[in-house]
Image (cartoon, rainbow, N blue to C red):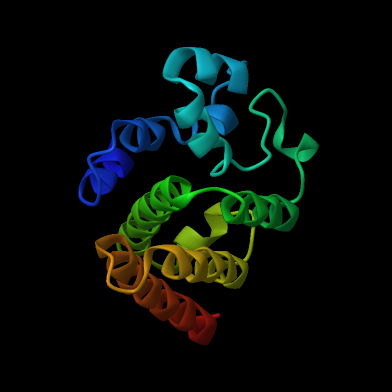
Amino acid sequence: MSVAMLIESVTDDEDTIIAGLMHDALEDVPGYTYEQLVEDCGIRVAEIVKHVTEPLDPNKNDDEQLPWLQRKEVYLQMLRSGNTQSVIVSAADKIHNTESFLRDAEKEGIMFVARFGSSIRNRLWFHKQVLAHVQEVLGDDNFLTQRFITCTIDFENIVDLYQTTS
């Protein structure tokens, strides 16, 4: 819901907002397919979601999935081949995820890093790659871009803090 609410701050396009609600469906819902998404929400929503979906299969165990870096590289390729609506959904999702991550880091301290399967530096790299594309497509004056930049600075500060204490 938070992702859709962020999207509503920059557009009233119903399909983009619905894509924000459904953005994780293909990678998180066991048995849910692209075809079902088309049937449920229409081709436009499904295409937006397809371009913000990692190659994850919710029917497989973690050890059966592609490695983290490979999934992120595929995500970036898909995002770059999508449209502006996909970039809006991706930006809102990354903002929401990062702000949640930062709140957890504030509550839990350095121990929060251990919960993730990739290094915090790799996560920052990916975050910055998405931000660069968002800036390219939406421009620096866009509300989502501005909020994304702010949370990136905060994220980088956490990474720097973690690096100096480990």
